[in-house]
Image (cartoon, rainbow, N blue to C red; front, side, top):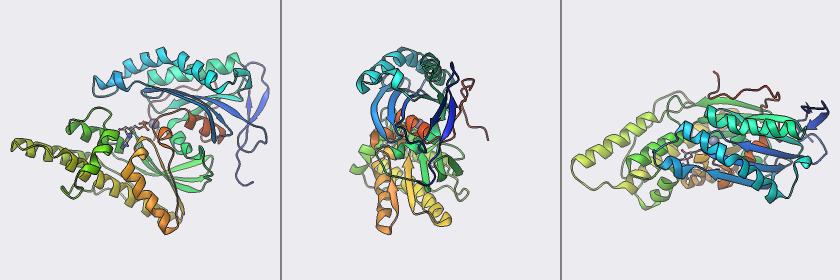
Length: 354
Ligand code: KG4
Ligand code: ZN
């Protein structure tokens, strides 16, 4: 067995040693919490790949009123949901806390007030049941969502496209993810959400725009590709180009061809994401590529990347429910020990330090 990580953890009360990770022969049940943004999520994951129970309580309806996530409101909603979500997960799994190997939670990046709810709940459970606590970086966990129900093994190149981030990541082994390029302004998800808003679609607009685009002509408008570094992204110019197009059409009192604009925008963003990731595959000589994050649920982006299978590449993307925020991916990241924070003293963080 090559490259199977294992690490010794100490339980918080009795100081007992517990080995965690794919390198141990014992069955491991990781209980995981995720509350970095507007989803209160909980999961129990067996050996990093098998989801025993998965609960996601979304706040979308609340934030829809404001057209975006309001941090203070999000934190309060997490407080209301966290206990019912935990209870439902244990009850669905028919597993008791004593049977859990370790308790994990997202540490950051994310909204501070929201993160604190999940992190403190996981720490409390770890102390109460005297089991190890494992803190997880949300971005690393999106990539690890690809291990769920899959036989994927590193090395591979990952394209992480979420509401907050857009990165190309080199994954050399389970514990090491190296960012080789990222956006210098908006993330792909932000671009989707902002353009959807310009077209009058409800928040968060990514999925709605995705459904609308196939009804439009993707050649109707030619939107610009940003001139940035080889593995860098910039989507703010694209967003402005869509805004100008919308303003021009409106100023002529013409009906807005929203499906055509959606299709043309999606065509641009898909081509840019694909081109840069493909270049990375070629430069580093990798034959496996994975998609991760909420925007990885996009039908056009998935289609474009899966076409690489014809060229002999192995292509992976999480099931739709594991693309957007969930806790199963936290359970997978904890098992594969991907960049973990092991101390109960760990503090939440809103951004990754550069
Ligand atoms: O990963 P995620 O759930 O949250 C963050 O960690 O940021 O990503 C949320 C983002 C939102 O911007 C949402 O509009 C976008 O993912 N999204 C999509 C689709 N489904 C969700 N964007 C494009 N097409 C989709 N089908
Ligand atoms: Zn996320």
